[in-house]
Length: 396
Image 1 (tube, rainbow, N blue to C red):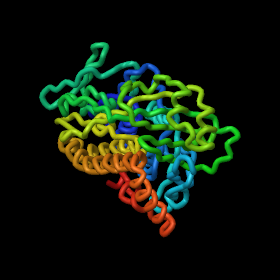
Image 2 (cartoon, helix red, strand yellow):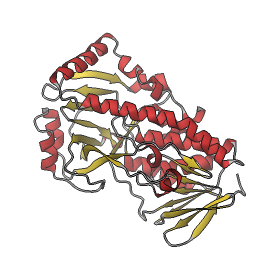
Image 3 (spheres, rainbow, N blue to C red):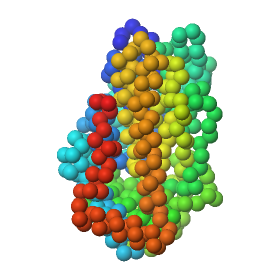
């Protein structure tokens, strides 16, 4: 929509870059501001299910992302000690055929780089690095931002995609500090050399903890994430190195295949898991929130990035439908997205409960039921999530 004021995006993570691309593809001029001068993304693996892959398709970057991906055949839910597979959830051809897109494992940095390069190459997007949005300003029917160097810019709308500690959120939904979940996550990436593994995601379910590992970087690396219930450490930094010995101790003796992976860990990182309950208000006038800024959720369903990608596509479509009434467009976007993200967060917490069962009786009942259901109807565990994976943000 040449000639109109630009849409201003605060935050250059996955959600902010996706929003910029979606808006530009809908015809808007976009200015994006990212506070890091080096936009390198911390983190490790991401699981992008069909709903997220369809959003990447709508952004025009599915093929570029797939170059860096691994394509798992299943998710295996397993028990420590015996290594028994309680349930095997089919992915691969079943997932792609049923939901219209592939299930991908990606390194977070690879997906971020694909989105950043696409945004920087788009003629309607200006990406400014090393500049943070410190204030959102309102004047009459307009909106603008003030940056950390004191400069100001007016725009058609402002998108707050600035993460779980969003500064834009406070002006939309009021003060609301993130809450510690009582869990700490370990993460590490190790080389896959010499590991002749079928491409699968493995979820090991223990008492008060679980461990996930799967191939990324087109199969060259293995991503490990371990989550442990504990309240004595609450650091949030994704870049804080931990001790390999501590990581190994948290999952010691679980299984020989786990031991092999943990022995390959040179530098693990750890961070405390925080969440924010969804605000009742996602937008105010010409300002809207997106991704973790409004619905930061636990990682137990591997949907955080997918929800941000979906947000971006839906927001751009709603704004394109009523570009002359931005508040109406943002209200429609919020109405479309609120229940779905709430449902995903609830399902993620249900997985956390399932993965961390303490009671021996409960473990026998729940895991026995999962095993029986998988034997009687092998595709049933996957079909339970039809509501999640069949969604196409471009058609919403």
